[in-house]
Image (cartoon, rainbow, N blue to C red; front, top):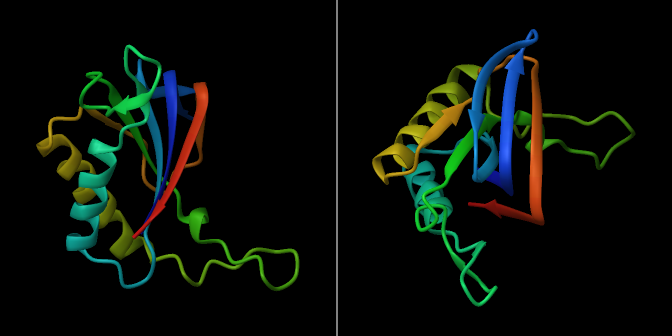
Length: 145
């Protein structure tokens, strides 16, 4: 399981030019599921994400979490996080979980964040999404469990 979290002041996601989700201050999180990942891993991964201190405090230090700043998360499924580029120029995706197993884990991970008190907006699993985001910092964190 892997996520890429980017700190944003706002972000919007659309599919076929129709708005789907929008957030203000918070994180855009690209979430990938690897073959064999479990619900237990998803829960731990989301606990880490919710408490990740990547927002600045009054002293300008990254010392506050998305929970602390009352931010939101735009949560986007992205199997391409498990691209294998070690052979040739076309990435392979054999490490990415099949959609039938990945989608329930993506939805479960989002529910874990909501249970932790983080407002979550989601993309549409498997859709060709258009995402606009205004990065702050920029701050980008990659986490793999």
